[in-house]
Image (cartoon, rainbow, N blue to C red):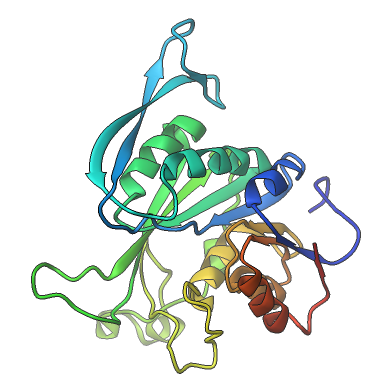
Length: 285
């Protein structure tokens, strides 16, 4: 990583609440931060909607990272019963830390679903600046139960923000290519090579009977994380996953020669990661 964070020793896996751990990491240490927090899926209990409203100097509110003032307002909306009484009081400080920890050419990938992604977009526009928004990736899959009362929901949303759009590292050519949907409309050479992915990714979930499966309930596919890591980091760069779960980011890091820091507060996740990364030197803290 040249003039960046270069701790001696192996990659790191932390057990514990990620917020104090994030606050103990140095500024600008990571080229890539991937966050896959709980999705706030729930039942019957009052929750709140978050809005970031730009303010003028001297009008109070919070100071944004690029000098923009903003006020956070919360409005009572729908009812949920989730792990967190106030989801955004939980997530907002972790997004603030993600901004601090990104290198100047770094990128944040925030993995959510339809329930919270629109609120997250407003908040990240306030924290990073609207000009730092890069993409909303739609990860589409076709597996699991289906309802006949509405269009079945079969996608996740991944918001992509650059720390500094003028310096953001992105290597499209490093990304695994995918088949053309109409290969007969392109040359045989192009069809054999495949096409660069767009912002809509068709990729199956982890198969319940596949070799990749660890048994961890929220495991994400290697193929999805590989694409993110390939595009937004270089070999030797440091990658952070603060909701590491089954350790897919670490497994991809081993495969692609990236350094990594993984954090999760669930002891079961740590046991899964120990088994999954057993052949790779890792320090567990």
